[in-house]
Image (cartoon, rainbow, N blue to C red; front, side):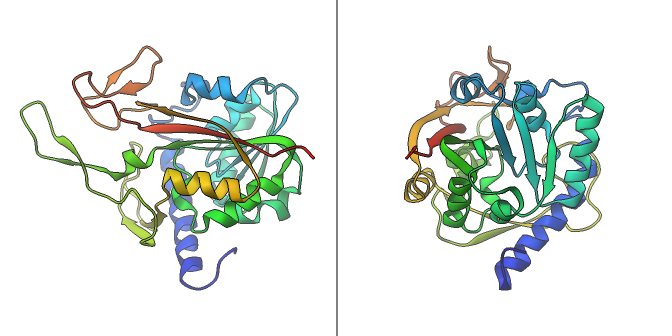
Length: 280
């Protein structure tokens, strides 16, 4: 395990939590495995930023059950998926086999990825949607990402915006609850404990390992940490759309994703950041 002491205990709790979540997620209508096109989990700007992936070596860090991993492989990339959950990796292998997609899956903590995957191996390091909050040490993660990349390669982070994670709801007018800033945007207060019997998908309650720990990471912290790891920021895109309806009053946009009504404030809910490793 990558961490000792209290942080190590938190990481182990997260691993157990994701092991428990996996069968619920694999059977959920949320993922609709075999019925929902994995391509739809990507925003159009992500595919633009990622460019032509045919023949490229791509690693998907913190891949969970490999839904987005499959979409990357179907773009012609040679894809490796990595996750710390034994149950998730087993499920990802099963799903990829059923979908007829060739993907290498490795079970390891993301901070130990270089030891398991090798240094300077990948053209693209991808991580997506709900991953960064499980990183207790962002500089260590950024150094790992940089070491995984070939010179001239790039990292792509598609993640829920810190504004989204800072929002909570309060009873409002007749048209529904108001969105208010209720949680930290900035990092610095340590781990936030979550203890819930239900996950973000539909399905039954968890019967064990319900506690998990998350760490706040602001956009400024992320950008600065990547730059200090030796990467160059190429682009940063913010969007007011999400791949699923976070609040009941969200409506479908032309992209097929979900957005708040026009009379709500136009706020960033997700971002895509591309950072490249300079060639010598």
